[in-house]
Image 1 (cartoon, rainbow, N blue to C red):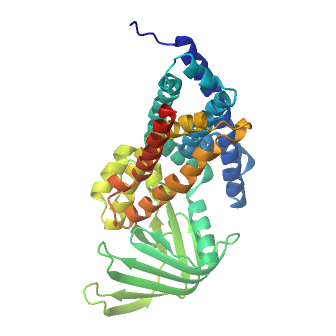
Image 2: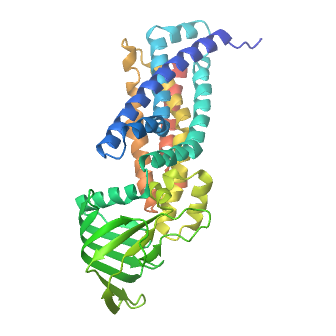
Image 3: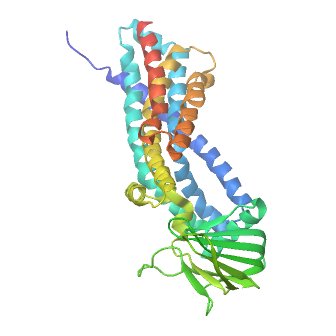
Amino acid sequence: MRFSVPKTLIKHISGEFTKAFTMTLVVVTAMWVLVSAIAVVRREVLGPKAFLLALPVMAVISFKYTLPMAVLLGASISYGRMSAENEIRAMEWNGIHIGWAIFPAAGIAVAASIVALVLNCEVIPAAHRGLDTIVRANIMDIIDRQLVRASRGREQIVFDTLTVDVKAYDRSTRSIEGIAVYQTDAQERPLRRIDAASARVVPGRLPGAVLIATEEPKEEREPKYVTFEFDNGVVTEFDPESGAIQKRFHAPAVALDLSDEEAREIGSKGMSMRQLGVYARSARRPAQRYVARTDIFERYALGVSPLFFVLLAAPMASLVRWKHVLTSFLPSLGVVIVIYYPLIAWAKVWGVENRMDPAYGMFAGDAAVLVAAAGVIIVLVRR
């Protein structure tokens, strides 16, 4: 018996899926960018020109989540329409195996997963760095935003081994009320503390200011400084071994070298896979290693998710013969929302806390979707 490939059928289904996927990706990405843009505008960190430059970068960043979702919705809508109009039944009645109906979607999903992996591992981290460059016109923007957040939420600002705590901050005059600066060594043992009722933040390094470099000097980079001037500040120095107070004296101005602070603020999400791997191996603190390893496997897990989403959505939509095609995505979307993303969130929290190896935990969602897809495919084949 001669084996024949239904090329016309594959071409038809591929076209249907591609159109539904493309339209869905555009709509979902536009909605995601709109929400992100509103959040950025509310933070008041972008002017009109910078805002327009940031929009395409935010669209690229959104692909981390919108691409898998567009694949899911595209497969559900296209196969839901074919099922509602009895095209799936017609294939079966004409002796065409249901596998040929799912095959085009699976092929497109493999391609989408490859694209998603490249985006998650290299392109989106580069986009995060690009957005960070657009958002921050100069180094003072970093300090301003962090001090504003610290004064509103009483959060501490951390620069490597330096922690700054403030009570109130006036961004227009860059004046601080109630400031405490703590410095520790690499083992997080106390070295010194500065207390002052008020202080001023000055761009650049003032003559005579004590320099605190938050990273080892690099000859190729351009130093970027910000200086804290304390009003009647007091320095308390500690013995790092015993924690006992060694001496107290008047606090001089302190200049921070923040040349690498831009890369540090965006964290691991702005690192390429190579940089993230090096960081995971060389991080001094265990918590930093856990975060880096979790991020690595999260990129892989989300990157391959389009394949599993299609293996679930296409057969499930083929089984559901609902009259309203646009609701055909609800069953598969429900599985993803109720099972997949909660498992991803749970595995991420446990990975960061080192309660589960992220090499296994981050793929729990993909495994659950695959099991659900296998069950749906078995039902569809036996129908």
